[in-house]
Image (cartoon, rainbow, N blue to C red; front, side, top):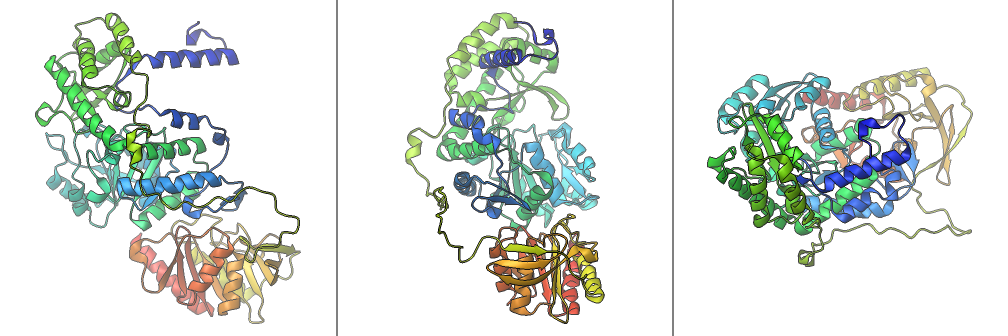
Length: 632
């Protein structure tokens, strides 16, 4: 077959297929010792090619009802059976990681990083990170700058550990809004409890892209229980998953900020097939993660030790080499990192060359994939015999390569897939929503007692709203629209006139800059349908405003999309559990809560203010605006 560069343009479909097959054949004979990749189970691999990859899985589970699914004003057929799997996966996360909330929608570890930085800090803030020379992610500083954030770095000592006293001084001087532990080259646990003590109220985010699977299996460290507020990661290193991202936490307000950021600005499709493959991986980790994680750490230490016995300079020998899946060979005394890596690659060995730990030119090895392939100490002894001469430049790669291929072909099976005897220890099953059978409605089907959404009968626009009441509603909208998290189509406003007319903003109206024709008049209600006059449909939450006027005599109702932090929830704010956007359930939950307060917070959604007159509603919005302003 021709080499890849020898093909003409454009490639034929047959040539593309041949090139993919050729790459697959070559990869199958490689000894994969990279620290940042993994192998999927047959089930997870099959899910990736499922026809479900062609379908959307929208929104966070808390905001998702049975089909049709909804994201804002976008509705489409949902995936009800997958919702049950996600519920179980969420419970797995709670038990493995100690997280009350889980976000599976991130497309990668880098996407998770972008999301947490965007959600938990503001432009102009400073983010504390790990410097690249100390093992930090090479992209964090660029992401901070791209998002309008500055950055400062932790101080490390000669033992590759954070110097807490000197780091405390940096925190005091720089006043970071976020402490982000973003290492990609590291060997030992981080002092998260001490960092949280230094951080105080400032969130601490731990990026476990490398060690998520070890943490799930009870190895390395336990970030959320030790002090981290957020645990995030990619899911394809020591974890069993595809190339996706995950964000976990138990602080409701932080996780709702993260979720709202994803819903409104960071993701629409979460890539359905990889998401389901991630759910598969979570369950595999639940059943067999503890045995796997312990074996990974054991194998990493063993292989590092075997290489050291053969004269290979391995970093941190005095500390047992490593406490996770990876270890580092210092190439400074034996050549250069690129030259060593080139020899390994020619012999069909995959590893990483990195510069880290005070600029050590190193080869980074990881054993997570070979562990899942069933390699034990005898196999790793053979590995050490084969690769030590390559590293030291004592053997030709071409002579070693056939023996590498022979070894790899003896370990095709993927282990720890959830079907061993460990499966007999069934976890307590989480409650999973029953999925109704799919069927056609009967010809004589009756309208349900309470529909999911209200109907609308729109007639041509009538008179514009009265000038004085409109001016006041515009002022309230401008004030509420300046809260954090607002986007131009978020929120809605309504007002009643002295003669009893009710006006509500049209769907998609920008509440921060309202015009008279942005309002629709609601003239009545029958058979779960609102009768309206206007040039556009009313807000999806028009029924909420109608109920507030009918049940409580509200003259002004204002709803924005501010996501509250816990310290902004005071006694007069009633908290409402998550409800689907635009639903009758949301409207009725708000109307019920309004009996107890003039200010309600709908989790994952936003604030609702109401008053019997303009001054009362204005007072509550100004009060919360002042609190939000001080917080931000």
